[in-house]
Image 1: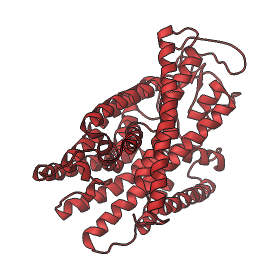
Image 2: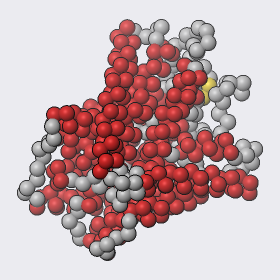
Image 3: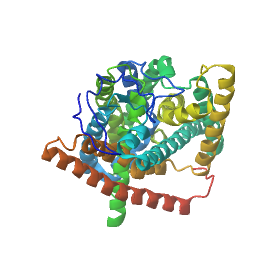
Length: 450
């Protein structure tokens, strides 16, 4: 795909032949591709499999509660597909801007900074890293919840959630130290796909059995009008989280050329095969349990015990692999800053530095997750003030800056609509997410055994 050229002063850029000139020397560019991680190596099949398994992590067990309960059948199904399609389109568009004037942008913040200047660089950096930090805390809570559910099957008085959160943080640390980059996950993706399919199939079997035997399902939407409105925006945030990560340029950087075409092939895998599973679990879970569906569906399963244990064991193991993809940009930034780029990743000096960097990161995130164990809030906040602009607003801003002078009027109008809509949606979903957090802070204490 080509992007028409344009020239002007400071913040304007020239864009042409996105992939034909990607080998041009850009060593003098402040947004270079110096990195401690691997780029330009992976196949689209590997990245597609990573996206399918990554988005089908154990978080999908919370979406029936977070999405369908506030919206009900009609709006729930409509918004699942409308927001899903809109998200797929936005990522499809963003993938086209991986190369600009021969420069390859392996980081989202570098891309926005190059086009719009340093202020946008810092805004993108903050938005993206807040998203990924919150996401990683959510994964730590997810793993801890799965371990506690296993303990609950064998004990009437299981240990506090915080113990399992610490175990989860330690497991994530070990994996991220042993498998430091996205590309290094290659040999783990096949196993991750197998266990992902396994726990989804087992859960669906039990959920369908429960749904057939449950004749008292309630699908009504409760609460005042104001509460329903806020809950609806929270549900929209959760739908966005199901479909996007806010780190597409970083994932795309690992792909072999042609990176734009290959990224779109990988996205097609996610929004066909991948969405079939995580939307399927969302809809079946709501059908089976109605408004009584838990924020973690395995809590609703009627058994047998071995299936409940198996599902939670696999959720925990699969989350170790999935969380690594979603936190990779932070690992890359820290590794590039603190590791010796002239030495191999597994050199003695870099192994010591890698160990310390990973220990500090997971210690901090695990502590915060243990102090604020409210999984639903992490999902809603994740999809509000940071992920909405990264997904919907910024790609349209890039289009207008890079193609605005040559694009047709209706295209420019469409992208302006996207920007305004994303801005308003950001405000609404953020208010909704903060409202839920305030409510839970009033309800729970720090380090609550949630």
